[in-house]
Structures are given as C-alpha cells and as structure tokens.
Image (tube, rainbow, N blue to C red; front, side):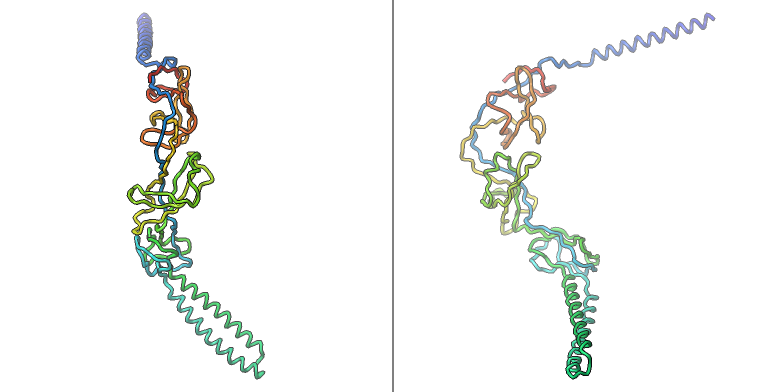
Length: 351
C-alpha cells in the first residue's frame, strides 16, 4: 500500500515537472518572437511632387501581324497525290499547291461525254422523224431533256475535277505545311497555311488622353525593333471603339513591307510622334508604384500617415512614369522604405 502511494506521488511530481517545463519553454519562445507594433512610425523616404517640363517624343510599342493569312483546305474529299510546295515557298495567286487524285472523276467524265454524244445523235434523228410524223413529239422532248441533264452532270464533274487542284487564294509565303502525299483531304481539314507579308498590320495601345493624336488615313513613321534604321510608313486604318483592361485603345496601321520582306509577322516595333510642345507634367519614379499594372497605386503621406492611393499613368520613359490623374503638385509620396508599410500606417520620413 505504501509503495502504491509512493508511485502515485512520483508520477504526479513528474507530470507537474513536465507541465512547468512546457510552460517555461512557451514563455521563452514567445519572448524570442518579434511582435510588430503597428502604432510605431515606419521610417520612409518621400518626395514632394512638382510639375516638371518635359520635351520628349511620344513612342508606342506594338506588334506586326500579316495583313492576310489563311489556312488552305479542300472543298472535296480525296487522296492527296502530290503537295507541290513546301514551308517557306513563295507562291502566286492561282498557283497550284496540292493535287488530289481525280482519276475516277475523269473516267466518269468520259462516260458522260459518250452519253451526251449518243443523246445528241438521237436528238438529230428524232427531229427528222418528228418532222415526218414518224414518231411522237414527246419522244424527242424526252431525249432533249436527257441531253440537258447529261450536260449538267458533265459541268458538275468538270467543277469537281477543277477542285482537285487546290490553288493559292492570294500571293504570299507558305508558313505551315500540314499534310503530305498519300494523306486524305476533306473539307475543313487544313492542308497548308499561307501568309501575305507584303503588307502588314501594326497595332499599338494608346491611352485615352492621347488618342486624339491619331487620325484615320493619316501617315505615321514606324520602325521595327530588329531594324531600327529602316523607316516604314503606316496609315491608320482602325481606331478601337472599346478600351482594353488597361484603359487603352488599339490603333492599327497598314504598313507596306520592304522589297525583301525583312519585316516578319510577330516582330515588335514602335511608332513615334514628335512632341513640339513643352508640357508641365507630374513625373514620379517608377519605384514609387505599387499595386498592379491594371490599377497602379502609390502611398500618399497625409497627416503623418501613409495612405494607399489609386493613380492613372500614361507614358513611361527610362525609370520614370508620367501620372495623368490622381496626383497634384505639392503631394508627398513614398519612394522608398516599403517594408512593413501598410495602408494607414504611421510614418516618419526624410526627403
């Protein structure tokens, strides 16, 4: 009995010791964890905004696309006897590209030609007999109708035979070969892709406040990033009627390619506009921007607090950004010290 009591007392003592040790470890861990004081002022670097004079040409980046591009497919079913071009081949409008097997159609055409020859002979014979009242006129009429029907069948076969030779709908370059000899062609199944890059479309996105600088059918200077020394002329053919997610509008140009077609589809380029006016603008460092490209924001300092503020930006040059709305001269914004910074935080600052 005494031993049992001793065991119980020892067990309770061990449990009490373990509880004490765990509590002591928790207090030690809590003391080591850094508890951020949200009321403590965060030191940041700020600037006071002012209107700056800017004399720089406006530049808009865009992408060149083919003016015409299509995937070629067959209008009828048939086995492919030969593909007459390869990827990279230059083709002319009307040039034969793919030849389908038409041997059966040609045999059917021969049969219908023989049938027409016999019917036409019958028509001549029945005409003489009908005039002599040797046969009824209805027999002549049926033969004439059969002749017309056979001629329609012949025209149908000729059209089908013509469609077995697939031709280029316009001049261009074969940019994809999607079939080979021996394959089966059917309507809707692409066989080749042809791209015309003699003319190109060039599309840029323009902020709404700068959209008025582009007029329909006016000519503007363009260049490709790969060939900056080659100046191209682009005519405005389309101005978008609906803004994209970045609140910009697409402006599209029609551009004549160089004689050697060195401007390729998918290349980047830019259109530049001379800005002869000296404007007073709000310019901020790019490092001050937080938020997203869709909705840029800055921290505006007011009454010792950092306030997250929406802005609208337009052009960007080097490491600075032009602000078109949301900020005014005299505003103070944060440009450095964003660690632990949050909307409404107390701040201390230096210029």
